[in-house]
Amino acid sequence: MNLILFGPPAAGKGTQAKRLVETRNMVQLSTGDMLRAAIASGSELGKRVEGVMQRGELVTDEIVIALIEDRLPEAEAAGGAIFDGFPRTVAQARALDTMLRGRGGGIDLVLRLKVDDEALTRRIAGRFAESGRPDDNPDSFRVRLDAYNAQTAPLIPYYLAAGKLVEIDGMGSVDTVAAAIDGALAGL
Ligand code: AMP
Image 1 (cartoon, helix red, strand yellow):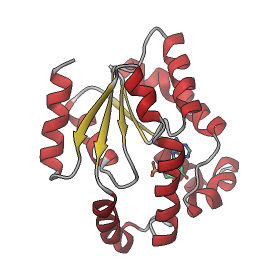
Image 2 (image 1 turned 180 degrees about the vertical axis):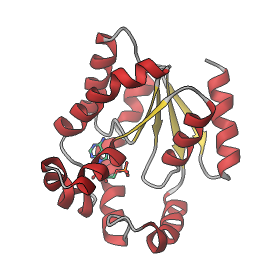
Image 3 (image 1 turned 60 degrees about the vertical axis):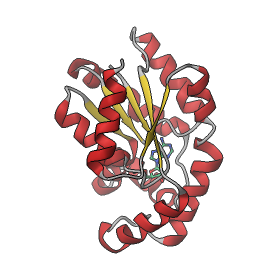
């Protein structure tokens, strides 16, 4: 089974992905985590993406598609992938469909976590203080939200047309959101 956790920054994608990893036999594929690991390791890739990420802009499709492609065999062996923060553009979604089709698979469901902008801004205000992430500051967060609205939100009609999109109310507690996700997955 392959799932996408979809939504704006700070919608709770990472939290819910980690819970799904614990409760199901799946691998979390977070391009954000992979890029942060590249920066921490001081690699060439890390050096290339550091400034872009810090500003809150998207890195190129080419970079994140290659990162995901590398990890697909591992996810397949484990029983499936939970894509977290990928795809973020229509080009990435098309590339993902092609890669999965080439391996005889596909996306089963896209779980769209819906959280309104006001709640996101409130949540992130708490995170700025404690996260230590250089892109968790008001200026970068605004850029990340704008990137979501301009480049990532067009994936909603893309997956709607494919009949893959399920909307999850992301405003409740972690447990309430988790229960809604389990309900959606039970219908598969
Ligand atoms: P995240 O941890 O998912 O919020 O990602 C943090 C940052 O990494 C984003 O603001 C982008 O700069 C970069 N990033 C992560 N995933 C992608 C992606 N799929 N496409 C482009 N940039 C990405």
